[in-house]
Amino acid sequence: MPSSTARSSRKPLAIGAGVVAAALLLGYASYTATRPDAPSSGSSSVAEGSADPQSGAYPALEKLARRDAKDPLAMGHADAPVVMVEYADFQCGYCGKFARDTEPELVEKYVEDGTLRIEWRNFPIFGEPSESAARAAWAAGQQGRFWQFHSAAYAEGAKEKGFGKDRLRALAGEAGVADLDRFTRDLVSDAARAAVKKDQEEAYGLGATSTPSFLINGRPVAGAQPTETFTEAIEAAKKAAGGAGR
Image (cartoon, rainbow, N blue to C red):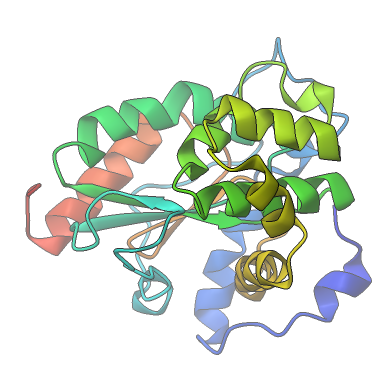
């Protein structure tokens, strides 16, 4: 987890004290479950704390959805009625649980019918290996293979193999990245570092300190909650947006 000094140096987003206080939900619930030494199996997929799907959505937080149709780190229509922004770290065990167990259900139920768009934000909090994996995911995205890299990096047992240079290249190969030499160059590029920093600063600006953290049309959801929590939040956001899927 980042040091308190590092956290205190971040400038909060100019969205009002009340919203920042609400957004602290993003960091509180999942820290004990997502620290690097937390067990990766044999434990509940729900982090400590809870997320109330009926809690208020905040317009200022909803505006963090970028809705860029060319964003390679997003899936779903740019004009979908519901956007889920996901802040996650590839070394986070609970992020992996969400990626394997919950996200595919949400994709099948809501992304495919046009209701939901998922926008990924790299939020590396566990040191250099996390930073490297985040840059690698971005680099894979430059060749249209972000979500395939995401799946490979979050496969059962993948994080235990580490995220060294050779391992990241191997994961890119598994993801079907066509030009591995370009991938290697992109991985260490200033553009990769800047993109990861942008996402990271956005999360810290919200007050988030741990992963996974989500915004569903501006409604904070903290931790790898049960599928039902996400379903209820998405349905509520869909109803509030006044629309069905495309």
